[in-house]
Image (cartoon, rainbow over the protein chains, first blue to last red):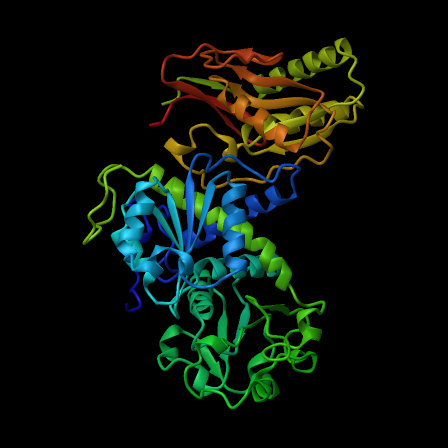
Length: 341
Length: 177
């Protein structure tokens, strides 16, 4: 599988409503802003006596995780449950795919159970896009991370966090530090920040952990952490993805921390009101010092709380987008042989 | 196009009348304490206008707002409204006497959705419905105890309130459902 190009008809209905959420790239600013606005309403649901609204009552959401995840899967599950949907968690490692059942056969079976939404996490770039093209158009697909390609709901919860603390994107300087090469989170964040109108997106990391085509993304690249941090409003530390490192890209974790670890000392170069974010899980003492992760500028745990609201917004928008879709307004599902429902 | 219009002085008069009905209701039912809850967006404007009048008369009343987008029964046909405003109930719903305020009462579906949402916040002691316009055409067993004006509309029409200040209203043709 190769990384999919932007695919508006796959993600948007003819009248511009979200129907699948595969990538940030290719979405208009208005849709991203609508996600953030809707998420703001859902944040309050978490504070209620009954943390549930009936929007997706009677819908079935399938968490299809081909790759290990705790935080993303549980927040998707919680988001679906707070929308009153029924949730199925499929642990692929233990499912029939490990007994030789093909991916398409498994999808057909899940469709036959009248599922309404697949939340897909996969180690291959383009996996969610592939499933969206081949699943019946009645099922909404949400990308929960595909290889090195995108992790759009994570980026939107990061955007929500930034807007919550900074109130705007215009004029903001945002630094993303560390393992950009393996990071689908960084790729989605860069697209989202550019679409939402951040003034400057900076990438900071060793050359070996920066992708070759990085200049085409509309960013400033720094290999020196302190230079890159100068005056930034938002600092995002990325997790060093040890499980994806298949060659000698780094001398050692200690060496990485020495050069690119986020410490209080280095954070002094950023704007005095800068916030510190991290998509989790944190490698303490590798990409971020404990004093920073637990420090007063850290908003890392708020990101998790906002993540539930953002996922509720995306799920309800995808569902309502396809519910209101006019006949004939569906995208061309090349290669699809949809099961009748 | 607009078949009928309600200008600002007319609506001010209806609001004055609603305040009198409200005070009579409060007196008849011995409500020591009660709160206004306006349904976004028209109902919130009306609730705010009633609240202002009550304060001018020396009555201290809590004011909240409700957005029922998440509780609509036509979600599967109409989808999510693009702009959902936060529900804000700055008081304890448990045991409270609530005056639920909307701009117009027609099918009763909005009031039903509002009741469902209110009960997710707690168990109110009582809920009284107050509306600026009662259009009739009910589809559910719901009625308003406090009402500014009853309006008979030709089929396929509705009242649209414009605000927040000044409040005016037009009778307009319903858009496509």
